[in-house]
Image (cartoon, rainbow, N blue to C red):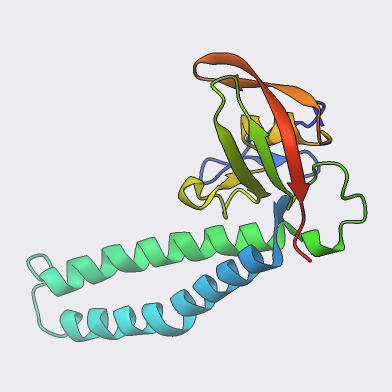
Length: 176
């Protein structure tokens, strides 16, 4: 999918792919919804109570509880706006439903070997789900963009900080 275009029109998050959607797995979508619920239903009401109590204690300029609470409310509100916008533009793709399992698409786990004879396995996920420690890479990453539509036995060119590198695809798997 070398023709994939990345749109970087928002300052508060990772880039979107062409079409304006944020691709994510059902697990990633559920995690963002859970975080939004936690912020709205648990954290924000608790901080509002603390700020209200602290405001009643008098001088607000030297009241640490009040100042910290107001700052935390701004952080919560900012993150809430981000999550709402992200979820509004989310396109949830369940990789279990992928019919063409011979090629690399969103949600695939790909095992490849690089020029240094290192065998790596990565899973292509949404930008909010990426976690290299778990082998999950963003669909907008250079490696994922290079791997998209590749087949087992194929070689693709990946731009890395070390320069262009050729990797060979050894296996492609999708969750069942």
